Image 1 (cartoon, helix red, strand yellow):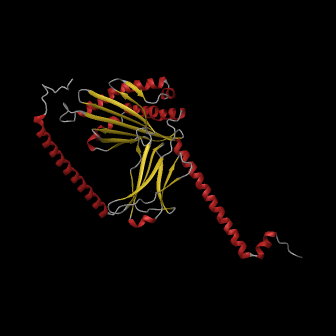
Image 2 (tube, one colour):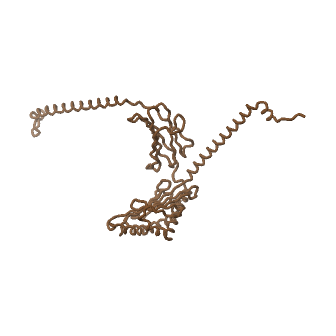
Image 3 (cartoon, one colour):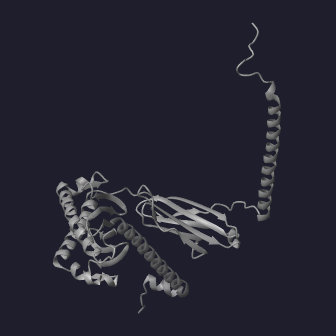
Length: 381
């Protein structure tokens, strides 16, 4: 009885070595395709996470003495964009973005205003109490600051912190999830029991929940605070006095601030030289700025470098090649040019001074023959 063999079995039997290699190669390609697909999905997930992540920061500063509160102001930021401020002298909330009124509602803003007015007496008590320990408390001004920040991701609170600062030095901090004050200055440890009283604990929780986290949710749920803006990128290079090559990649005008700049050499990633970064800095229009420089030895002049930029508004990583190397004069040629320029300027100055002296002498010789202003010479009729 003849045994039947499947077409696949016959195919494998006829060319076992070649066919096995083809199957292994096919499986390998499938694995690579699967890994690349996972990477693409991961990048999209990161981009979406960046878009859903928001941060709110409130900063309050009080200045006073043991006798009185001299100044109190607060300022609020969301995703590094100023929302508004509070002025103690005017007792007024100034909102920078008009539609914030609609997002929060009149009742919410009114309650916040009352809380700020109430906070004046709390700041006054704190400053007067702490100033008692100052040997020169009768004449010295003190500054107390409260820094509160919270973060959400898809409306879920992920972080919140509090920082207490006295005369420029942080004395206490707290991570809200932990709920414990961390003392940073031993001389202030004796005040920790005050911070842990039910009154201050309740005030802290109400403020953080309602005027940090809930405010963040209301604003992000109503409207996008600022439209996303892609970066404007420029790439340049020059040669420093030591002969090293300096490459610069500058991205500016982008929002949100999350961005990635990196260098590629001949299409490959790596660490190629001495890198320096300015860090992400704010612009005046609430966009951001970042510059990345790379210092290379002179022998790298023939290599092809590219600045790669990734931002949420760039659908794919953008490539910005470094322009061709400019012509750089040799040091002795540059020095000779400067010397000739200086000699030429000095010669011109000397000639001008000589001409000026001669003109002055000639004018003085002719002054006696000029007619007097009192008896001008009239033309004949």
